[in-house]
Image (cartoon, rainbow, N blue to C red; front, side):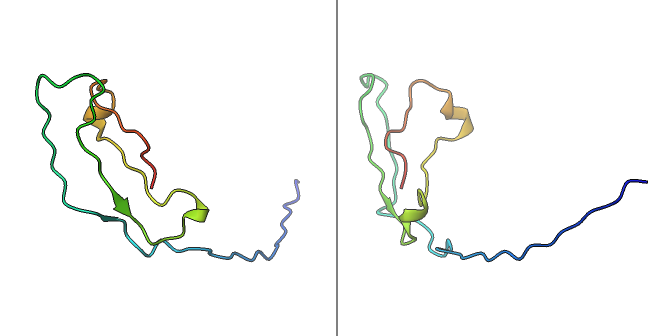
Length: 81
């Protein structure tokens, strides 16, 4: 018979910053792109703020929806909050 071994170790967990503040956008955004827009032309800047502590990593990340993420016509730059 194989013996079952078990050990218990106490662990202390310190929560540094609870995600208790949702990001807030600076405004309501809506963008339109002309069909003759140049490649790599910036057409909107989106800004948001989050009161949670950023020392623990990015507070939020902007992302494109799945149907657009693989479309080379749209990209995000500096998308971390």
